[in-house]
Length: 349
Ligand SMILES: Cc1ncc(C[n+]2csc(CCOP(=O)(O)OP(=O)(O)O)c2C)c(N)n1
Ligand code: SF4
Ligand SMILES: [Mg+2]
Image (tube, rainbow, N blue to C red):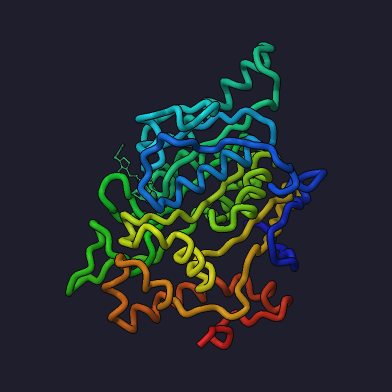
């Protein structure tokens, strides 16, 4: 285990004690045109992972490095590999469902060998692995944890839409309690997903990651700062992006903004980051957003039909609320230091 320290400051954080200088906010670069994911992809209207990938690539390119991306099977790969020109000048390899972190490792080794042979300059590339929640929490977890354990320098990004969307909305380790998916259908006897979702960033920190961060494309500056920090910090860094999926969440295609905002305001998605000081094995946690009065989880359940079954069962809604509050208990010292209540008293009516 590691020792826990909290940053008292709540908000986007360009500083890191692992970096000599703060990274630049996207606005500080001035009018530099950069291209992330360009047109030609086949993502659904309102897809959160398209926006998240776009912001990730823009942030990494702003660092001036060449992006080498290893992408695992899932929506992100399927929608971008029929017309690969949408990746622009990113070097991309598409690999199998469990393999993202393993092929990321292969790219890192290959570029190290090329640098030793003088064929590329060292540190001129940023190596990224991108996979879905199924590819990260489930079938790709072994490769991810082993990559972290080897301590290699790179960035792993989990695009979390909370189920296996590309193959027909099967539940994953990231599927929230009560969700209706094709493998956790909402019926009379078993009411949707009975398990509590897991948290990949907890696992990554336990495995020894240098830096982990949760972001969402609604707050693009925060996401891009985190991507740049992950690119600059030495060692394995893991990012997780909240990714609205109208197809799998059974939501309208034009409420990307509203759903993400509700995720933040109900505290069901936590924007935070954590960085590790290796010699003392201390991890510094920073909370990047906390609503002063948070909304009840029932508000979050409204715009997404995947939750339509559980909405009618008050005990299930209460259980979902308890899961959130149990997770926020961790942040109690930071909330209290900032005069914010952490429990029901803090809920807006
Ligand atoms: C070994 C293997 N098993 C199953 C599949 C089929 N498959 C491809 S993508 C996928 C689900 C991807 O889910 P996730 O990683 O969450 O990505 P999403 O599509 O949701 O973005 C599955 C089951 C495969 N390609 N390879
Ligand atoms: S199914 Fe979901 S994740 Fe896949 S492209 Fe459509 S909106 Fe995006
Ligand atoms: Mg998924």
